[in-house]
Length: 340
Ligand code: 13P
Image (cartoon, rainbow, N blue to C red):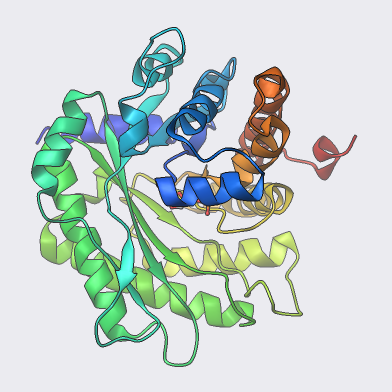
């Protein structure tokens, strides 16, 4: 492992007020989104959509890294150029999702454990040869009666730490994603307490497994109430709850924190990221950025609808959200950017 090379990549991922484009939906998830938008669920539609995303003109101004899926990392544009080469030419670091999904966890009804450690070392070496310099692994935790349980948190945290150690050994920066879902009607403070507990468990495992904090990115949820909670916070309230939680648990050595969007609208995700940076940027040790899928892609997917003629308009919609989020990193996003 070249520790300095890892640190350099991790710093690049959070540099210049840019963030990550998560475009690593598994085929089933991608097909589900396509079905909702009445788009054909074929390998060619998935390829065409990924081409639309990676060839959006000037994407590298806002996006530092793109997270691909196993199918996508091998794909090419219609003109025969590998997506990985298109991204590299834009100054965008290639990332790859390497977990194989969250499965029902034995002995823990309603909870899930993320799988994919078997053979991971060899897969990482292959992805590195294909140009990937960072990876992603997502653990999913739900909030409810007795959940997340200690058993679920510890098993997922250990898997995240082993994944992170394997990545660093293979020369890839691990993006470590423990996601507490927004499903439910729980209040903001419950999400804060559970997120804190999860992150404590994850960082404890990093220490046990010898993960280098300087060479990783934490991808986590913002502290927010459940989507069905009647009392929704202002962006400032959400930002303060999130900053308080992270300050208690995340070591200063971590290279950066990139938030997932988790089902928030694009506008809300930008407003909350903006409030975080506007209120806390100078008082927190890590850059706070975005690693959104839905909050970057949803308008673009709707506009595209599977039609080639809509590609330029869809790309503009993607670039608009990317621009809003770069502004949010600077604390300069204004809802007016999303009006008109
Ligand atoms: P969302 O931003 O849609 O939550 O997706 C982020 C992600 O990468 C999930 O693993």
